[in-house]
Image (cartoon, rainbow, N blue to C red; front, side, top):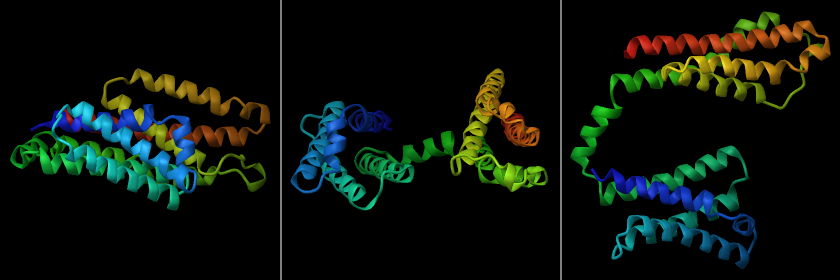
Length: 240
């Protein structure tokens, strides 16, 4: 099915966008006028050259040319209309990868074989069980934890001051790790994760002499871990 070609194109993107995008290129791309366009052109050219070299199709110029043009346009749009944020970064990467997959699909993919592979490897019962499990540990789990610990929330005068939304993302990441550890049979790693979080998260709380805050944060953490563990054990029962 020529998946090796897709993997080569993705490898070329990773090499060019992360390992060969030097600081002076990153800074130059933010410049206005000729200097910015020059940096954008060099960066897009690096992508095209990497794709050309890894594909090793010395008479095939179409894919490197399309990658050069589309990468240049996407990066120009990103610099002009999007700020430096996680969302902008993800959108930018998704656009580049969509171009790569689209090129591969049009030029190399055998649709019949691809459909068979999708049905046998991806669009299976196991895939949908895993998909639902990972979706549940994000917003649904956060809402459930919030409702559960609401009754123990400290008063406003006792609230912990932290970075906006940091707690939410800490919860997301820890539940992804716990669920992945359970599904892959590395349950012992959950203990190390809990110990590490306890050291960093609760190290300053005992100094604050606010037992209620300590118990509130600990309750949220244990609820988060418990939900991820229960979902993980349920998935293992369903897919094995």
